[in-house]
Length: 130
Image 1 (cartoon, rainbow, N blue to C red):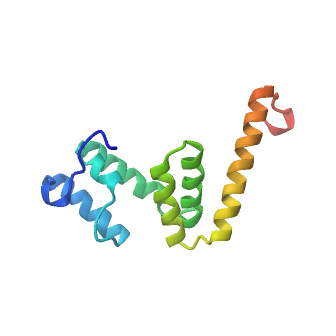
Image 2 (cartoon, helix red, strand yellow; image 1 turned 45 degrees about the vertical axis):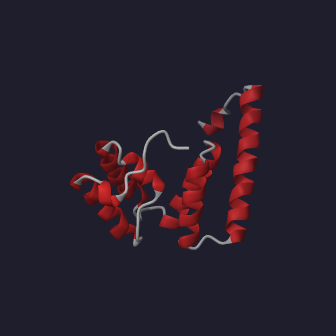
């Protein structure tokens, strides 16, 4: 349950509507999702987060599908149910198959396990890796 209200387009300020409209246009969506509706309670955070996300997720050295899959991995590691759902859907929209998702989850699980082992055993970093 959200700690604040969802701000719908009809009740939004002009500043929020401008960001919502940019999100809808950029993502080719009929409406923004709940994440943005919650952030709209603080328009400066909404705008800053959207602008940063557009910049970071734009095509670059990593293609958009890879970026979405990385976002899924971090979201799983951070235990953000909303982010896992949102970015899994976005990755599928960009071409991620069920097989790719299965491999991604296997890598996330393995990395989590080996990370915990390395942390627990306090394994020193090899000089060759520095």
